[in-house]
Each structure stands twice: as structure tokens, then as C-alpha cells.
Length: 95
Length: 188
Image (cartoon, rainbow over all chains, first blue to last red; front, side):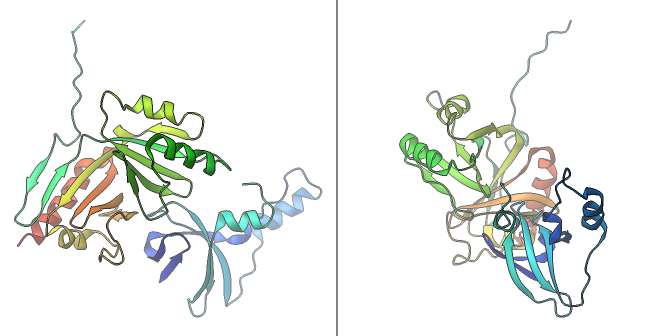
């Protein structure tokens, strides 16, 4: 499997480490209302469809960047790769 | 109390070996300083690099060089400055130059630099380096981080048949062993 890194170009998937679902970027406010329910949902509940997943991958054997990879679990086709930083910023996060 | 004198020594003892078609040597004459770009500080840093050394910022996969300074990309918003230290340009003076515009750390003692050169350099690397090193995919001036023999490494093509291979100094002997073995097996 080849992951097309947005900055570095195509790299073999063995250079990367998988972390988990990209929804981990959207950590709820620890001081908000209903924080217990929100954290429960954030930590434990995941959709697990057969098909398209958005996943966090870490380029450990490369430039140590975090990526959001959109991958189809039925075909292994990768349809989109973005820097996790850019994804987080697009959601209004400060970093 | 014993009178102890500390003597600076290169980690591989100045290793230098000529194989039949390539040469592998430790470079112990290069100082390294990592520079991290402050948030929204790209312009200030690149202006300073330009006025100090007429150096431009490296791209994610390409080094830049000017006036004896080479900038090697590490990751987004971070790069290494490599240079020969002398009386006019020291690690301290370079850090002072960038004090207001970048976050700097001296990394000279954190890396080992092996210089692999000669006609057989590419064949030696084909055995251990997973990247495509064809001249059109990885031309002179390119740099990339990858893994060689399970060790995190950085490769810089400083010339068509000359590469810098950089890895952690703590595992320098293992890294040398891996590269040296590759050179030996691919030497014709």
C-alpha cells in the first residue's frame, strides 16, 4: 500500500504507523457541559462501516508528520491524504 | 583526585574506507543546528536567513545552500543548518544570529554523518535505502528522512554521486555497520 504524502510524495505504508479514527482530533472540551457523556462517546464509541474510513496515520519512519488518510477498508483504495494539522485548523483549532 | 582531561573525538574515530567503487567516510567537521519556525514567523525567519547568509528556506524535500550554510528540511516548520564551524561562525554565533526569529538547538553531538561517494554509491544505497534514488526522482540537493536497517536516518544528495547519510549518534556504530556491509556486498 502506498500513501501519497501531501508534502513528500508517495511513500510505502510500512513507513507509517496507524493510530486510530480521525475523530480523535475532535476532543471535546473537558470543561464543557455533559462532559462525561461527551468524553465517553469520544473515547469509546466508533462507527465501523465496511467501506470508507478516515484514519490518523503517523509518518514515524519519515518526517514525523500526522496525516488524515481516507481509506476504503473493502478495497484498500486511498482517496485522500491530508496533513492532520490542516484538518484540525479547518475545524477551527488554534494549532 | 585523578587529573582527567577530556579530549573531543569523533564518534566513529574518523572512519574512512575506500571500497572498489565507493568511499565511505565519517564527516566530523560539520556543525548542526536545528531551527524551528515560530508560529506565523515564516517571513521574519526567511528574511533573516536572506540578510545573514543569502540563504533561502528549504522546501520539504529540497535543501538550500549559500555562503557555506546548508539548510536541510526535517519536517514541517523545522530544518537543520549545517556548516563548517570556524572562528567567525560558531554554533553560538549562529544561534545568536537567529535568536529573535527562530527556536534553535545545537544538534552537532546528536547526529553522525556518513558521506558515501563514488560511482557505486547508488548501488550500495539500493540495498538499504527504501527510497527511489533515481536522478529524476531524487536529484542533487534532495533530502529525505527514512529508515535504513531499522534505524531512523536522513539522506541528502549533495552531488550526483555523493550522499550524506545522517542518523542518531547513539547508534552510530550500528548504522556504520549497516552501510559498510552494504558497500562491501555491492563493491564489484
